[in-house]
Length: 556
Ligand SMILES: CC(C)=CCC/C(C)=C/COP(=O)(O)OP(=O)(O)O
Image 1 (cartoon, rainbow, N blue to C red):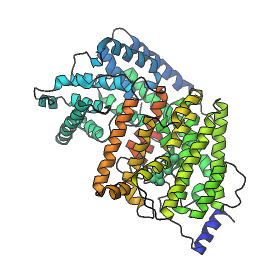
Image 2: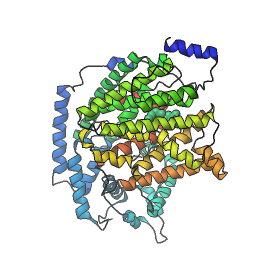
Image 3: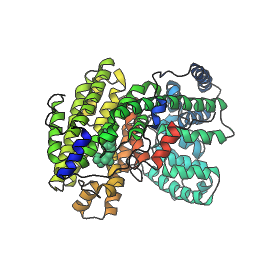
């Protein structure tokens, strides 16, 4: 019996299935047109980029530029999305500034609010401990931020962006955040110039929490309008944007071909088909050319586990799910006979993905990573199963029970594990050991992911039978309103950002590229789950992001 026939026969026997009515994919096989065997970049473009990089490098290391001018240049390089070409130079320049112009954590430059805020943000971004006391000089005798600052809109905006790097206990940054938010909100309403547009954007999407590709896309158009821009840098950013877009198009094209051949949307029509959205998630983790294979594997993780999630959350019956879970625990392709056809099909897809990950780990010489991947995968599925049992038994978990399980079922432990495999042999066994001990930075990212998802998905999920989320558990346990629970969730999300910021300061537990992946995963949550679940309901902003990053080339 085919999978579709077996689905129809289920209907005849009226098995209780919990269907979620997800919208079909917006993209179908649109991306198939980009599928390509050749992943090489056009030689001519490569040469142009190389020449521009060379000029920029000379500018960066030249002695003539004043330190704060270099700080602004570095800021533009980062925001235009090309800092990955100049990592060593940027690190050295900021290191020198830190050595020469920071004493006991205090920045000794005496400059305007805008420059100091940019410098503070860049130093923190690079992991340097700098004190926010540098902003004390902008306070009045009452210890409040001086009203005179309101006229300095650029400075206010820069300070606002700098506050996003705050860690726990930084009262001055909390105050700066409240002060700048209030005033920027009113400036944005009153004013109509281009700065007002930037303010509106930043109030909704801060720089620190934005996905690097989206920031590059936006900042290129702002930088282009800036009369004092650096033309070499602007052209480099535009050419690089198109070069990356071209590579990303080929990757999503090849993934689309694989997905089409599997024919999942027809065979498992109950599940979300979010191939393009999954690619954006993977591209959010790493966009650089060297992560091409890693992006493809991560897209497959997201798109397949979305189907697995919908199988556990909605379609599968409890008996089928118990069988499926046991099959996963055996980690073997044998013994599928007991599974219904639709699950055999799903299991085979998952099995093939595991094989692909295994081959990649062997190729990269990091076979030790596989055991961690397997354990995480099984733990993740077992958490889905436990939630399905709760739902089946109408069990209402306590907040502690919910937190324990839902942080595993969020999938972020599995996602982080797999994305490290894609980083190759810099991912030593110690990195996986560190990860399996759930360090604070991982914990923070997982809590953030769980809560952001729960806050925005809650209403849609509760339309069908769905296990309690953080909101229900918190409301029950503390007898508070939904609003009160949302507020508590938001406070925990803000705390999680502070933890992540703190854990990213030197000395870090692991090299920075591993922290960048976690930061990017959290950024994806901020961009996509801020006020609705744009991954599931992908017709709005998500469609705009995909179109802007993967369809529309940049005009040079
Ligand atoms: C492994 C991962 C992260 C896969 C990504 C796909 C996915 C399950 C997204 C969240 O869906 P959801 O909002 O329905 O999730 P949940 O059921 O956990 O609330």
